[in-house]
Length: 373
Image (cartoon, rainbow, N blue to C red; front, side, top):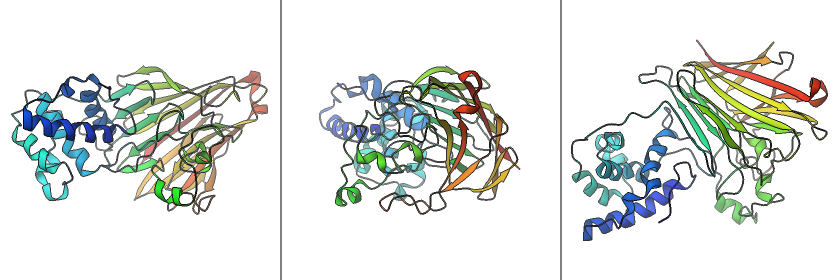
């Protein structure tokens, strides 16, 4: 049986198909035909919880719209019945069943009827990571966190279904606001009707001309303003949990030989701040590196960074090193191409390091994002 990966962009659809099919069979013939023993399937439910942010939206990398649908919520009742773990017991459905119905509603009522008092309730770790085809890492706020901290980080490559050129990208939520965003899903049907072949994933594919799918539309780092190498894979090379969790990704292959090396490190410094550190070496192909952050916040430039304002909250962007670099604001509303996904107030923040300014070919770019009251 195929093992499901908790970080696959299409994992929820696999869950829908498998559980609806075997869940109904179990009610009819008394057997799930071994699906519950699949090691990846049970883990995928915990993965879904990790990818759920305090805002109610998910970490929407690849072709995901960021919203949770009714069936995805209902699936947790199956996991709760199978594991006896209160972690998966979906109280939202019980509180508002009329707002949580979907095609699994009928069988979900049977799963609900099979519920017993949870034998245990697992606590999700505050720092979580999985490597593989689509590496991800997530840092949550502590239980009862008043500022609703959430950081999601993405590695990987363009060799998986529904992927984007998004290696090294991140989303960041604080005080109920998603400051760094992923544009997420763009209607494939509309693109098909326009004659675009968006299902080809080679280097020259027209898919990568779209802002929502190329690296210029993600909060990552780019070399020479060029398209990522679709064969390059960004793996997680280090992960630490604890009071100040951190994760490091190797982006060198993603940048297609345009740098000697590039290690991107994220650190949760506190419940109010994160550090993003890019340590790199240049080579003869390096012209410049550009740090990017996609946001819909209003931006005010400062001497060493910027202040972002959204929904009555503020976020400080501070360039720690090198301190003489400015922040540029690139408006993307309207977007560059007519067929691009329009996002109201969308902009890309950029910090650019010319290669000629990097002494000894070794450089370090450090940016802190922190809450402001």
